[in-house]
Length: 354
Image (cartoon, rainbow, N blue to C red; front, side, top):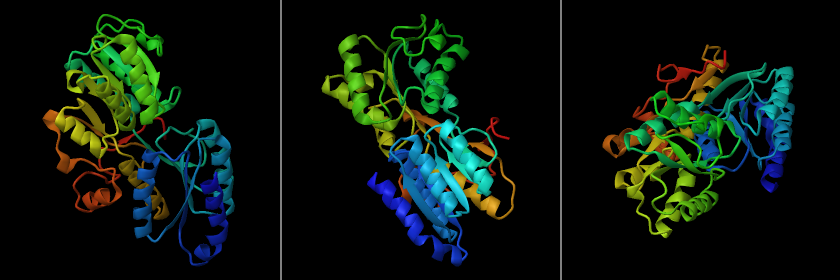
C-alpha cells in the first residue's frame, strides 16, 4: 500500500505545473505488480514520453477499491486520458461512469472491460484462440492425457485459454466427452482428451510448481502425456517440479503462452514444446496508438485483437520475435522488425466492441 499512497501523493504534488504547460497527462492504473502489466507499462511510457506526454502510474494490490480510488483521483486531477488494467468488469463499470461524466476517455488493456460509455478503446488478445493454438500443437504431438494449470480460476483470460484448448480438440472432431461442461473436474473427458489434473497457479511460478508437484505425486510419471501451463512464469515452476522429480521434460508435451525471451530458449533446447509470442509490450503499444489517434482526431477501431503467433522448435525465428524487454522492444520497433501499426490488417477488430 505504500507505493499506492505515494503514487497518489505524487499526483497531487505534480499536477498543476504539467497542466499549466499544456502537456498531455495520462493516468495509468495497473491492478497488481504483475510482470506482464509492468512490461506493457514500460513500453507505453517510452512511447508516450516521445510524444511529450506525462505518464503517472498507480499500482494496486488486486483490490477493487484501489482501482476506484485511483481512477477518481486521476479524474479529479483532470488527466487527458486514462489507461486501465482492471480489477474486475464491475469495478471498471463504476470507473467508466465517473470518467464519462468528466469527459475523460478511458482505454483498457488485457482483460475485457464492459463496453459502456466512457470506454474509448480496448487492446487485448484473443485468449480463446490462444488456447486453440496450444490444442493444435498438443494434438500434433498425440496428447490425450493433459494436466491443466490455469492462471487464475474464474478470470476471463484464463477461462478463455482453457475453453479455447478444449474447443480446439472438439473442432478437430476429437472425442472430449463432457469436458466443456466439466471444467475443473479431474479425470473428465473422452477417448481423445482427458484432463487428468486441474489446478490454478495464479500466474506465478511457486503456486504452479506446487500444482505440478501434486499432479506428479497423484499421477506418477506415466500418468500424463503433457501439460498446458497458461503462462511462462507458471511454466517456470512446472519445469522445476518436473526436473526435481527426475522427469525429462522433453519426453512430454509442454505448451504455454506469453512468449517471453526465456521461452525462446526453452523451445530451442527442447525443454518445452511450444509457446505463443503474445506480448504485453505490443498490447500497450496499441493503446498508445489509440490515444495518439484520438488526440489527433483520427478514427481507429474501438476494440482490437492484438496479433500473436505460436512457435515450436521447427519455426522458431528469434530475430522476428517480439520482445518483452523494453529496450529490445523499442529497438526492434524502430527497426520495423515486426508489425505494430494499429492500421495493419494483422490487428483484427474485436467484435465485442463497436
